[in-house]
Image (cartoon, rainbow, N blue to C red; front, side, top):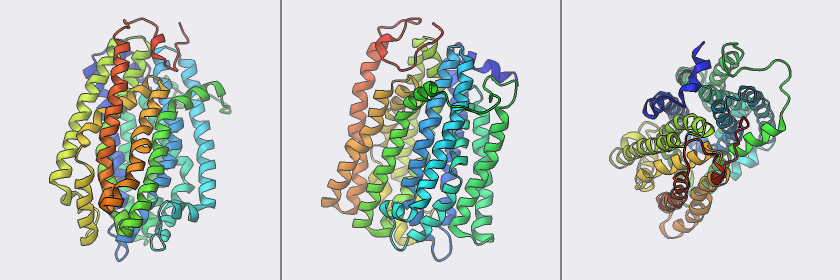
Length: 469
């Protein structure tokens, strides 16, 4: 396929608007599909006869553990994708191929080690994350299958990010859509027809990812690809691994922090509202996740454009792609705000028919999202720092909202407001995080103002150096 060899060049020459449309639209479709992919399990599980509400609460308990697994995947995958984008901008194709090999090796190592540790201690881990006697059996049945296929999940998402960064966002989108559609078809078969319940949902998930991974591996063996798998054993290059992991540290800590925060939230919800409150949070989390994924789709479109042009020392184009991405992300978050305030009952009703669970989730959705219209550009800013290899700032912004602001508020507010206090902590932490981000992004653009295209970025403090200069 000739396009895969020439596509990266356009990142430094085509208009930013056209590029963002080309790269963001597939990313948005893929990430929206990914959110639906996660929602599909929740929707079908929530309607299992007789146990739907408890099964849904059990699924919500697994979110922290799944976030932790995702964090390890992003540590390897996002760092590798960012590094590949910049290396392609530098025309350093040999090293880019080494990054691909490292991505596979590291994902295999982290996926196996994480899965084995969690399977050995599955019961105490799930109880620590908020499982009760009523929900433990459902959470365990689901996670045992997911963990058994953990390596497949890591490799699938890691290679999907590299497909996008190497100039083929449509294929990355297509593979994600395939997993969503196939999962939607297989879920009711395994859950209801075969009578496997919540375990069937997990089997369908792993099976769909296995099929997509098989195609991804074949894709990277093609000789016409600018990125392709080398022959022989994939020995780790620790210098490349160090750079890749350092760049991925920001999103890793963000996901790891999300795991810790969700654990604290579940514990507080169990204390003040019981299993029903955890189920309500699971529904709200799934709804919010859909809008977050749309913004992340814009971030995915921005990442190769910003990374390539930063590697090519074209700072005017870097600034343009940030501004345009932030504008569109803000528009998405305005839609998110309107939907949360005007149509909460309709969205919650997709997941459950239980009137008590539905009423509580409805209230939680309204309470938790009054300032989400501010979140879009904050997410874009965090990803922007990561795209340029500015690890320290990316890590700080990733952690500030969740650990510095949200965790203390999750424990303070419920003392005075009960279970609603847990949800009031979300908008409060959003405001504090946005103020912090504004300070850092303003400082960065002041430094950009001192650079002309072609200048070495010494004043920016990026980890990524141009090895060809």
